[in-house]
Image (tube, rainbow, N blue to C red; front, side, top):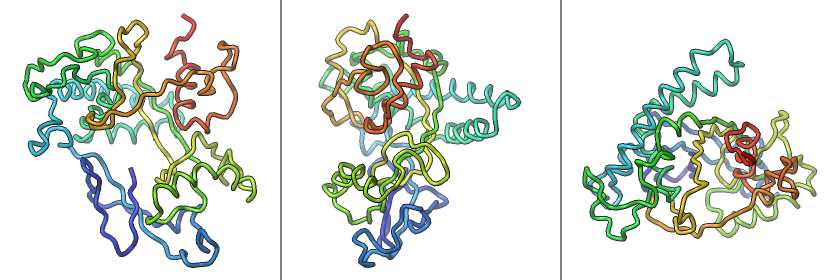
Length: 309
């Protein structure tokens, strides 16, 4: 993840994150979307700014200062998934002769991240966000116990949560986001950022910018927010919730599993995964649906998600 700041400001990472050490910085002026004449073409914003890379803290979920986040059961489950994932990536690296240079490089990058101890927190954050493993009981005082007694929406002992099965379903997809053009300055308000996304398509049409690929020919997979992310390597696990009872009761949560977010169900047709007949894989542009449509379509193509049995 990358966080922006002006040259006069000191970057303060959001709660649960930290500035990477050693520091990894990027100058805004080095991105092709940086406007040297400024967003308003007056030259008033021609001064560059710096992006700093941040990462999740190793103790993001087990810091005694935030005991309400501690979930020993979920922590141990994340560790098991990480161990399985490390073995899986080692196996893939051994098959170098069967991988093209880009695939090998991608696998190597992902492996280095998984090898980092803070990857356990990243995996746990993924489990938390799904809402599936959140405690049903509103009293979360038992979450600090080694024998997690509070019932979850889906038990960690369920077959669908088995670490080995999750890792066997693992897929790595590389994404190239369609970034804002011009890049918004660090002081841009949240309302202005939302307006940028809403109006980007029409502004690209007026400027003649190709909405589908960059000047190097790389195909955009989704629309980026204000975060700068030229390349994203995403690791995805697929959990089959087909016969899961009470799915409508499962909350959508933030990365810390504490803030409930309104869950929105979107059909595969609306995600541009399937055509309107509900059978054929769509070839429509998935960018308006952010990352989800692109990822789900890839999983369907590779039969990781079996829609038709």
